[in-house]
Length: 390
Image 1 (tube, one colour):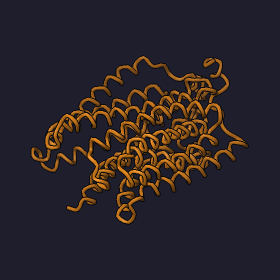
Image 2 (image 1 turned 90 degrees about the vertical axis):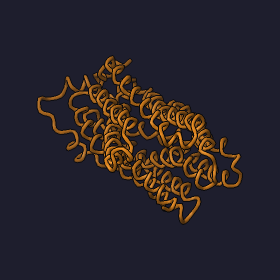
Image 3 (image 1 turned 180 degrees about the horizontal axis):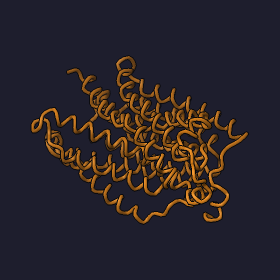
Image 4 (image 1 turned 45 degrees about the horizontal axis):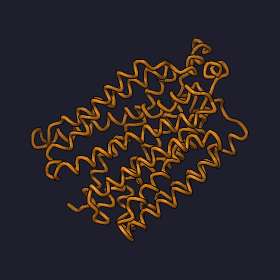
């Protein structure tokens, strides 16, 4: 089997989870807007933890035949459904728990937490590749991250029992009438522009995360013959820089707003991605500093949840953020690995070109959003909730 086809199959399984995001996300968001953020926030991590744990315990093809890859695919789909409710629910949850002047920092801290999870995964992968031979990894060591992640996910579900419902939802529930329209119906009828803008900036987020953070180590192993431990070690540095800068970007958003932070951050992301791909090709020893710089530039993605939680009113916020984010991620996040893999056959720098093109689209969406919100924008907090948060 050609290398490109083998890689395409691996990324295909990876992409399958993205296709389940919209359904899981919209269903959980619907209940989150109707019955509360906290319940859905707790259920989503449970739905992530259990399939992850099962993946670590699955029998192999040698034991149960074709049922093994089918079960793996099913668990990946359940993971996708879970994250469809988890990430948007988390952004809405923290944004509604803080004063309006701290929403950027709250979104940045949460985004840093999400990318910190990627960092833990990179550290785990690096450690396994250092501690075990390739044969041992293929035999049993690949299971360690899944089992560990599943256990910690169940611990996280237990800890969420002590969370409180957001003041925004409590205020919304008190003033809601006995008959509420389905949130998704209201959103699709009245907030189509917010949906389109949110989907475009989410596309920018997928390009940054999927290509720069998730795909680049494997691509550099194929393109430049770099050892897995080398590329994964550089990926750890990049993801650490991303985690720190996501929080910094959140603080900057509270001070300068989405447009200025997004435009400057977008330009930095394009420049650093090109520097990474051309610089490593010229001299592989440049990998670590250039990857760390690119990872820091990816921190500008905090602008995406910041924009989305402001784009929708409280009554449809969870549904709006979840629908826009997950539909966009399903389309672009799922297609990106496959598309970039195919484009690389024609151009060695296709990954960098793809990121640059999508970031330009995201920057245009930020300008569109700024021109729209200069005229009108929904309040993040209903008036009765603001005193609670002061």
